[in-house]
Amino acid sequence: MDFFIIALIFCGVLFSIAGIILAVFLYRNKKPDKTNTTSPKSKYVLSDNSNIFHRPDCPCVKKIDSINLNTRHNSYSTLISVGCKPCKKCNPR
Ligand SMILES: [Zn+2]
Image (cartoon, rainbow, N blue to C red; front, side, top):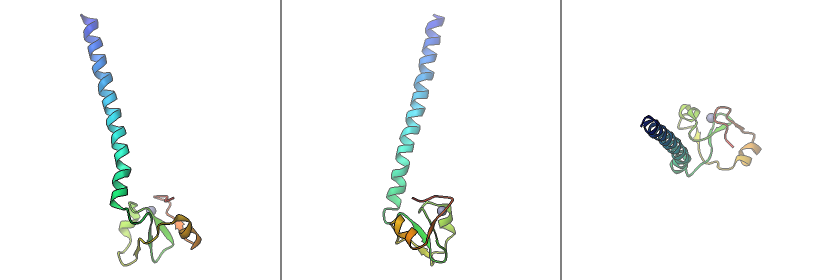
């Protein structure tokens, strides 16, 4: 009887761990979809008064004045060729 209870608890723990792993896995898979749907227009955000470009979800983007905000760039190689540098915080590629 004791063994049965232990086996039952063991199975319960095993299944709950599997459930947590599955939930985390699904959550991680959903996350990039969210960022893609919120910013489908531009891959990179650039401030007009600096030569550093960011990912749209970078915290630095919130500090950029809306007047200086430049979201027209979509090509990494173009930005590099104009002399822009990727932000070290969000590391856009
Ligand atoms: Zn950044």
